[in-house]
Amino acid sequence: MAAESILRECGKSETELRAEWEAQIKTQTKPLPLIDDVAGQSRNAGKDAVKELLQLRETRDGLKKREREYDALVEDEATPMDEYMEAKADLELVRLRLQELATRIRNKQSILSVTDRTQLKNLTNNPFLAAQMNALALKQRLRDRLRARKFEMERLECSFCKQVNDHKVDAHTASSIKQREPAITKVARSFNVLCDTMEDLFNKGKAPPGAICPKKLEIKGIFALDVDDAIWEDLGLDEGSPVATPPWLSDEGVRAGIRALLEYDRCIEEKVRLRHECRSMHFWLSEEWRIVNLALGT
Picture 1 (cartoon, rainbow, N blue to C red):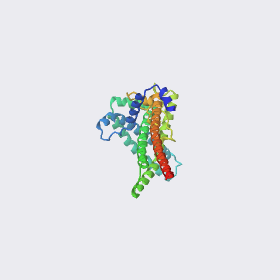
Picture 2 (picture 1 turned 90 degrees about the horizontal axis):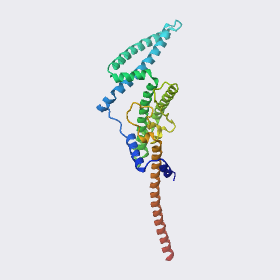
Picture 3 (picture 1 turned 60 degrees about the vertical axis):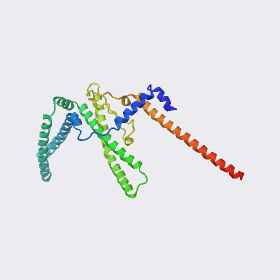
Picture 4 (picture 1 turned 90 degrees about the vertical axis):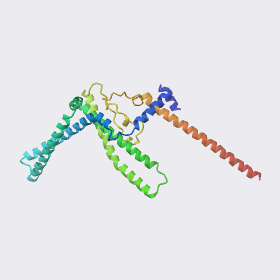
């Protein structure tokens, strides 16, 4: 059996593999933190403030670009009167929005700690770190959406003996799931674009020492959400975490061993089922043979 061969070659005992599999299940199925989790909010408040500041600055840069475009239209004497009036009105709105953003950015910066300000400075000066943080946020959002979608699909797949109203609810749920798929795919593609950006910066020597480029996601099979999919891996993204990467995620031998162990378990289960079916068939044939002999004897 191929699974048995892989189990022998992976160099890990069955006990170790089962322990790692339990740890993987616990990590991948843990519930999302509650919104009112004060402790979680206090631990992540600085990181969230830095993320929000980066988003505000990105919005500000986009508005400044629009301001230059509108300003060029207003200053151009060849601009038609209707376009001139529209550009002038839009320019005033953009400048008001820029003033509001500037105030929000100042307020956000004033509440940052020294560590958070250092992190913000590093992210601002290093595009690789900025892309890394954005990619991690996208992947976490994608993971949450895929997990919610899988739970909805399981509800549909495990439905039996439904009434008419239940079938209508299931049809509506299936339609909603289908409508959300393009948005999920768009997030995955945005993540892959950031991965390409990080790889390009890495090749140009603009990444920090020891940085790792994250793996891109396979769009085609992303909705399967298998246990060994790249969607669960944060290697190259969450470099600031002091926690060591668990073997079930980083050790290829353990990963291959877990897959082989699960396949082996299914084979054992199938063997037990077939043995039961064989006994049942033997009993049925014996009974049929007895009835036939009884009929011939009479």
